[in-house]
Structures are given as structure tokens and as C-alpha cells.
Length: 189
Image (cartoon, rainbow, N blue to C red; front, side):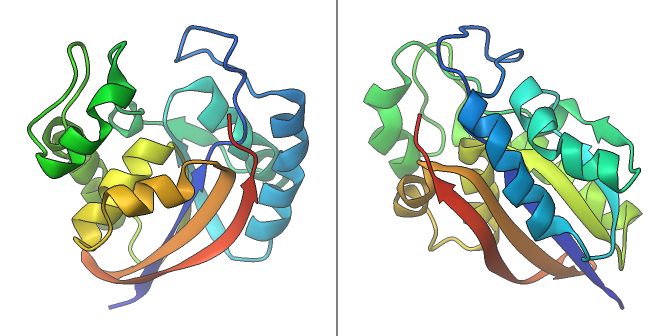
């Protein structure tokens, strides 16, 4: 079995003054930081780019994908966790009990129910390939926790201000082999 490399690219700094989560653009700093993303991904034999449909995720990987002439496909299942207005009040409760969420928000279990099938589809359809995935922090933390249960709230907190952030996950089939952090800029929101 050939090793599959998934390059999860957490989006660059978003413009928080833009209230619509789906169409939230990158800040000028976020736009500039995409050059680091492109340089990090170059020369890695990447054959496919898939992303959350959210603008900031697509826009973070767009320069690399354009330069490599790879079309970005989006997958609704890769979107960020739906957050209610009191999301920060429930952070510790949510990570202590994966079935808990603030009103209007998704639980970790609910996010897993859509992320893991998306992950498995990417693995099943791209065996032995290298794939870029435009992604989000909470969603990335939930995937990391699924692959390595020792990574939970502390791991989420560690990457919170890393915008952008790139980590490569290696698999044989669906078996997780390990990960390597490749790039990060601590920008915060």
C-alpha cells in the first residue's frame, strides 16, 4: 500500500469585522501570508486541492492551487464547526463531553459525523497521492483528536492563534501513520 499525504492548511487571518462566517475574507496580512503557504506546499507532488467552501479557506490555498494549475473542489462536509453566540462559554464543556454544545452550535460528535466520512472519501479516492485540504481550526482539532485521542482541548488551544497553519497527516489506506507540522504563523484574530 502506498502512503497518502494529506496537507491540512488552516486558513490565514480572517477579517473578523465581516460577520458572515461563510463569506468572511482574509485580512491584508492574511492575504500576504498566503505566499508562505505556497512556498511550503511547492515541490511536494500535490495532485489535488479540496477545501471547505468557506471563502477564507479557499482563498488561503488558491494561490498555490492556481500556480500548480490544480482546480479547487469544495466539500460542504469540511466546513467549520457551527458556533452559537456563546461558543467560548462552552469551550471546556464541549471538549469534556463531545455531545455538548452551546445553543445554535454543533457538538464535537456532530462535526465528527460529517468530517470523518469526508476524510475517508479523500483517502479512498486518492490513495498514494498528496492532497491539500483548505480547512479550519476547530475542525482540524476535531480530526486530530479523532486520530490521536491525546490531542484535545490543549491541542486546540495550541493552534488557536496559528493563522495560517499547515500540518501533514500520513496514511496507509485509512490507517493513520503520524503527522508533521510544516508551517505556522502566530497571528491570532
